[in-house]
Each structure stands twice: as C-alpha cells, then as structure tokens.
Image 1 (cartoon, each protein chain N blue to C red):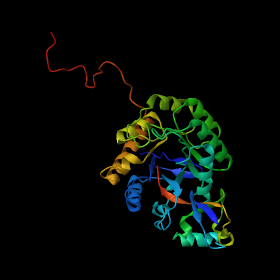
Image 2: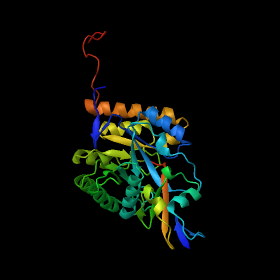
Image 3: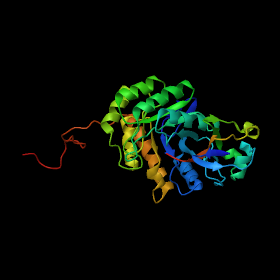
Image 4: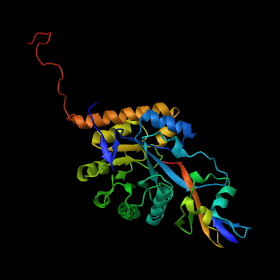
Length: 259
Length: 67
C-alpha cells in the first residue's frame, strides 16, 4: 500500500483504526489486541480509586509508540470534562483528550453544546482535542473552527454494535468540514469500519465490538484489515454505481450464429 | 476531623495527616494516582507537605480501560 500516514499534533499515524481499552478481561489481553491491530492511538478513562486497588497501571500495558488519548467519560458538563482533562494531564498522560460529555444515561448520546464549550477551553489550554459528538454540521464546523484536531461523530449509540446508522449526516460532514472526521462508537463489524473508510473518514474508533468478541485479537486484526481496505478503496476512487448492466466480457465473437 | 474522600465522608482521628500518609494508608501506589484537594490538583512532590484540614474534599483517581 502506498505511503498514507497522517500527522496530528506532531505525531505520525499510520494505522487508521483507533482502539479503545474498555471491557477487556485483562490488561494483558488489551495489550495483545493493540499490538494485533497495530494501533497507533488508544483511549483510556479516569476514575476514582478504591482503597487497596490493584497496583498495576493500565498505561504500562499500552505498547510503546501507541499514543494515549484520555477520554472524559463520566463528565456531564463542559466544566467536568475540563476538570478530567486537567487531572489526566497532571497524571502524566499527555495532552490528547477525547471529549465525551454525556447527560443521557439510556442512549449515552453526547451533549453537543457542552462538548463545544469544553473543546474551546481545552484547545486554548494547549490540549489536542478530539470531540465525540452527535453528527451535526453546524456544530462540527464550530468544533473545527475552534481548533479541534478531528471531529468524532457517532455511528450508533456507544456499545450498541449497530453500525453506521448516521451515514448521511457523516457523509455531509466529510464533504463540508476540513478537519479529519473519525467515526466513534457503534461500529460492530469490520464491514462497518470499511464503509466509513470508503466514504472518506480519516479513521474509526472501535472498542466494544472488539472487546466482547469471542476472539478479540483476531477480531481486531479483521477490523484493521477492513480499515485498510476501505482506505485504499477511497484513495483509488470508488467505482461508479449504475442501474443497468454493463457487460464485462466483449460483446463480439460469440460462439453462436446470428440470425 | 471530617473529610470527604472520593465522595464519601470519613472521620480522621490523627491530628495531622499528610496526603502522602493518606495515600500510603489506603494501600495505593503513589505513582498510579492523581490527587485533587478542593478541586486543586496537588503535584506528587507536595504531598508530604500538605496536611488534611477539616471538611477538605479529596479526589484520588487513576486510569482505567475505556473507549
């Protein structure tokens, strides 16, 4: 495949499959999955610690060279997201932040207005900001204008594995927004990821589908290959679709006599 | 004195307890956690100097898997 890397905040990204670290049965398996996917970017969350909690740090299991993006999951407002981002940075996790502001417990759909506020604040503070959002062109435009590194519309509700249910809206965002578009959440099958990449998404972020698979390592590989296939197809230009047949074999020299 | 740790009110019997001691008492490894006192992040180097005050609100957090 031709050279097709991409740079964000000075970091070179070859693999357009971002893999989240939630729901794995252990840190060691999570590490194997990141390695199998050859992931260049992963996500982790920040939570309160119980007394006597296990001493090993999930960050120690992230392969070297894989960039960690801290998510602000649990935040219900922009202020809470900003607080989590600052804590993460103080903890030495760097300045890449996935903003996730959710006030809806049933569908876990993001609050775009609070997300925009948090993005504005954190970009000004020097964070590299990846806002997770409900696909909306006006909000996406504002996020890009205030300096988001990418805009991350959802494909379907988090953890639902329903695929790219927001296709038309994401397609409009890809056409209209200069910032990279990364579909985050809801992708369940490698073909879902491939579809996103064929459309021109810069990357996809997948967690649940891989983590809950019977074989997470192979499923991650399958996703990785699907992302590569979709990207290569996008770069090649998708074939035109027409309503009627167009013969692919010559229409002369048939082994029959014409009347 | 009464302090709130990760959202739970706790009575502290010691007259002086530093953040450093608090983290050790809870069986946590200092390198794995970040501490906030009254919404202010306290750098690890300052933990030995910070003593808990009555009605302080303390958050002790660390990284977990997440998407």
